[in-house]
Length: 218
Image 1 (cartoon, rainbow, N blue to C red):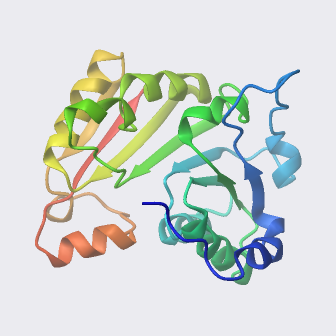
Image 2 (cartoon, rainbow, N blue to C red):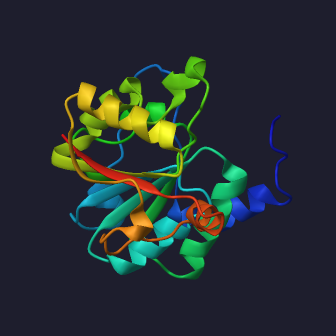
């Protein structure tokens, strides 16, 4: 079922244009698409971190405030949800966070190779049916994209509540040449410090579900 367009969505998007980098093209355009100039966008050469699937933006806005010397781009394909994240950023006057609208499989069309130091995958859809495995954000076809985008020594941080998806991710990262560190099967009963609780994470915690987390390095 297609999500109904939010009332006044176009007006709201216009109001947050200063933090909106626009749509990720999902088709090959004649003459190609010009890659984003990250230094020009942020006015500096700080490291770039990328969140894929940012939802309403709690994580992105929180971490951008905590790390002012890092630039952040957050990606979300559901614009009805994303507009709320962008409104938070503009209202809070967060200058080191921008947004892209669209699908992750086309990110290499707009982001320069080796421009990203860290990718966050927070509670991505697990697509539990095996026939939909290629849509999981830790499937080989996405990992190949991340390899293009990540700088040498770059890292992917993943969190999920889904044990089968986590097992799939562990195997997928290993099979595709990533090195795994700081694996935990119960994040909130571990000694990990500095965790930012997302909207989904709070819901899962209230249900008593464990949170799984890993770091994957290229």
